Length: 279
Length: 352
Image (tube, rainbow over all chains, first blue to last red; front, side, top):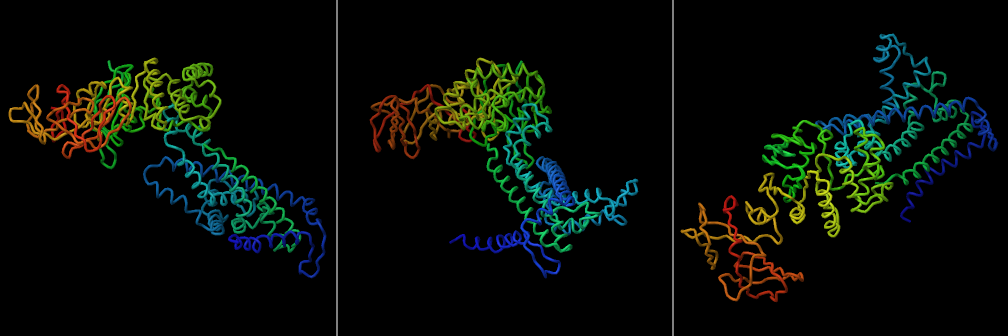
């Protein structure tokens, strides 16, 4: 009884739309919603035969791997440094946490300003040193830009977890290592890094999920999936096909695939987090 | 030449708090030195300053003839055993012990030889492949010691290594450590708050209070001739009894409450108000004496009895052999061994 409200919310806001999506993915509808036909798994078959879709899948994996790696490594370095900072700790940490409070769209807009081919500060600078920057024309540059923007947004979150993980390590361990003649660099790699593995793993999954599903806003503002689909990831394609291309059936099929992916990743995470090394 | 030398060592924290007040000490090679004192007295701080984990504000620390003030912990050639063992949880016990040697670039077969040697010494051979988590407290303690011994350092530093163990294991490990140290002959600094541990293990001990070295000496020196009232009360169990007393004008008799005690030798004191101290075990029961106590509680320990009594309002503890029949409200007449009187200045607590 006491969990009834939660069950109702889950049913209404999650199960029902999810089942609708599944149902929709088995239909073909014309663009104006006039005619509907039940076609079983034709939408899925079509997707997997579509080169374009397969490419998008590959691109998405590449994109999220890059975002996760970039944001994890940068925040790891920042956290390792913050862990050692003695003076002004509070200010340093607050500054690093700020980006997390910025909405994805705003974050995207910010990066667009910086890198706008004609007026952006960074792009002007890059052009002045002889590197031609135009993410509106060059696919790889566009990709790099969304990766950086998406990673930037996630750094604070990772930073907080890494820092908490590092501070949970007993100080005497670090002291013991320093008596054991380990340099600060070595201490980090042989003691601190292995001990925050559970945190790192958790963050890896969270970051991949983030890159997969929550960077829509950034991409939408920065590149709109372009140029020539160079930054179109799965979520963006769902939106594009469904709401721009009005292929509701195909779009629904894509979101069902995404849903399965999320469920898979969640199970993966739970399995590993539960098995996480205890000390 | 001394092996470890402390010269006017002081520690002042950035907030102005002075944790250690100018400590001077010379430690000979192979000595077992115990730093003892109540919690917050600065004993761990002093040890950590020798280890290089805390900065030295003033003064100098020399280890094996080298001034180490500005050297990193790793360059001081010391090994430390921590209270919580500080074993690396993600490494096997073997790797825990090998870690320091590996960092120093010791060849692999040499590391292997030394780790196995030490494991044998500490009876850890069967546990080398396990992780610290899978060991009991006593075993972890041994691994932590093994990690220190493998390095063959100039000095061992122990920071309350036994306080996480249960009482029985503590007594056992006390012997293990003492024996090992005697066998290896490595200079050792050992921090504890437990005066029994301090008395039983130390060649010499330093009693610290509020960052001041109250007394440095052998256990028996401290027991027989405590330099301050604090040392008198801290060393020995049960603690020494203290009574406010008045010294007669010709310095050969003290008086407290209704009791007058003649002194064998004249006492040299500025003030006539002094503190008289005697140990609970230095009394005998007599039929008639100048001092009679009111019994409050008797603890029978079998071989001996601890009697908690009062002289007027002053609590007095007695420790007598055998089974003493006494109960609350009884009166006991006691004599104090006249060679075992202790006198302290009232203001400074210094020995007279």
